[in-house]
Image (cartoon, rainbow, N blue to C red; front, top):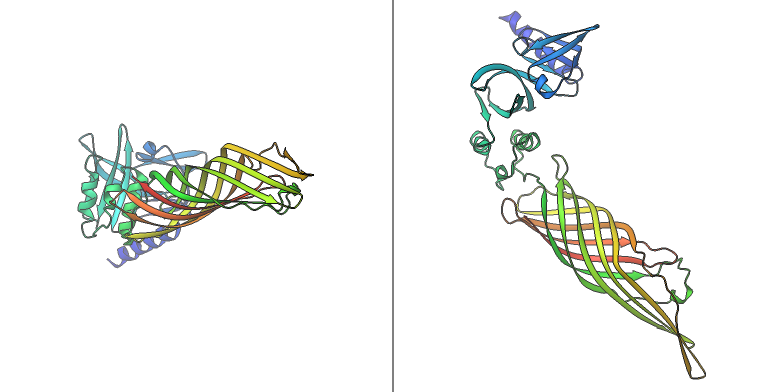
Length: 367
C-alpha cells in the first residue's frame, strides 16, 4: 500500500509540474512527459493521439491511455460514453475543471457535452434540455439574474457558466446586446488657434442643441466584463453668428446633418442590480449635410456692400476624434437592459476648418 501511495503521489506531482509545459500521455501507472504529440482534427483527437518517435509515429487509443495533453493546456481524458446506442471508450476534451468538470465530444454526426460532478455524476447534456441539466447540477448555487437562460449550447458559453460556478462568481453572464438609443446633444464649434482665415478669428458660436437617434451593439470580449461598444447615431445642427466692427460685419451660417460611429472599449462593473460602466475609444463623424456660408458686409459712405467670402465648408466632411463616457445600466429582466450615459466627443479641426465638441446625454434600451 505504501509503495502504491508513493507511486501515485509521484505521478500526480510529475503531472502537475509538467503537463502544462509540455505534451504528455498518462496510463494507469505511468506519465510520459517531454514528448512530442501530433494534434489531429477534433474528431481524430477524440479517437486517438499520435506520438512522434524519431521518424515514425505511435498511435494510442482511448483503451490504452487514461489522459493526454498538449503544452498549450488542452487536455483529453478517456471515458466510456454511449455513441449511437453503443458503449464506446473515447477521449473527451476537458473544457473546465473543478466542482463540475465540463467535457466536449465530437464524432461522426455528433457534437455533445458531458458534466462530471464529485466523481459520482457523469451525464451527457443534449441540446434539447441542456439548461435543465445545468440548473439541476448547480442547484446548490442560487443563480442571480437568471444567467442560465442566457447560456448558449456552445463551448464558450457553457464553459463560462461552469467556470463561474466553480469559482463562486455569482455575477451576470456577459452576452451580446443590440438595441436603440435616443438622447440630447449639445454641440460646440470652436476656431482652432492656427486658423488661417483671419476674418473668422474673432467669432464665437453659441452651442447648438439637437436630438439624437441611433442603434448600437455591445459585444463582450472573451469571458470578461470588457466589451466592444459600437453603433450609429444621427444628429442635426444649425449655427449662426454675427461679428461686428466699426468698418465691417461678418455673418456665418452653418447647417449639418451628422452620422457618428463610435468604437469604444467599455467596462461594466459586475454587481447585479445597478451596474456602472465607463467607456473610451475613437469616433468617426461623417456629415451627410454640410453647408457653410460666410458673408462680409462693409459700409462706405452709406453704401453697404455684402460679399460671400468662403465657398468651402468650414467643417470637414469626415472627422476622426475620441469619445469618453460614463453611465449606469439596470436589467429589466434577464436579457433586456435600460441604461443612461453621459458622453463627451472631441473632433479636432485644422487651419481651415473648425473644431467640433459634443456633450451627449444618452438613453439606451437593449433586447
